[in-house]
Amino acid sequence: MNKTTILNWSELEDRKPTYALVGDVDLVVVRFDDSVSVLYGRCAHRGALMSDGVVSGKNLICGLHGWDYRLDSGISEYNNNEILPKFNAWVEDGKVLVDADEIADWAASHPQPYNRDAYQGIYQDSHGTADEPHVKWIRKLSNEGLRKVGHHGRAGAMGVPRDQLPRWETCNSSWPSCTGCHCSMMRW
Ligand code: FES
Image 1 (tube, rainbow, N blue to C red):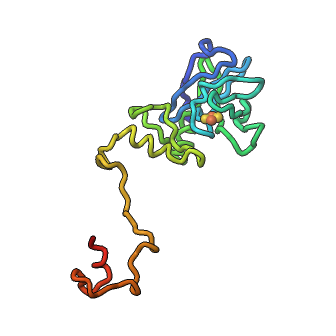
Image 2 (cartoon, rainbow, N blue to C red):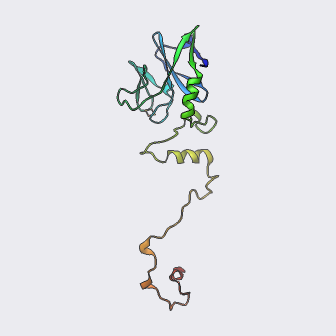
């Protein structure tokens, strides 16, 4: 157990999601009347900061596309497979405390992809979705420009479609440039 203060209870506005960082893990802290909830602070959808969301009833709602998570469990009522891990938290001597060991244990099996010093910092979308498959590539270009791919951008092998390759039956070995190999026909 590594008791760690993340906020002063008196500064925590009721039902207003608030950001905290422990180790490398973004958290969202919500005061709800006399209780406090500390959840993983990144939406399971696209990684938005949940501290930018709102509280509606007993749910924490992501500010980007409206995914919901129960404050008391971190589990979405809409889809129980969408979950924000919930960490132990309590109020002691006017402070909100968590167990930094518990959070570090979780982080060991869930390495955080956010580079706080890079372009977009903590506002990065680390994974994209199937309908937006190029997010990672766009981020890479934003970070590195063309340094790693050259001025021409990404290059791949220029394959020739099979139906455009010369065939034995069209080979004309009487051509002056012919070396006996049909490939030489390609010298135009
Ligand atoms: S990032 Fe949270 S709902 Fe899309």
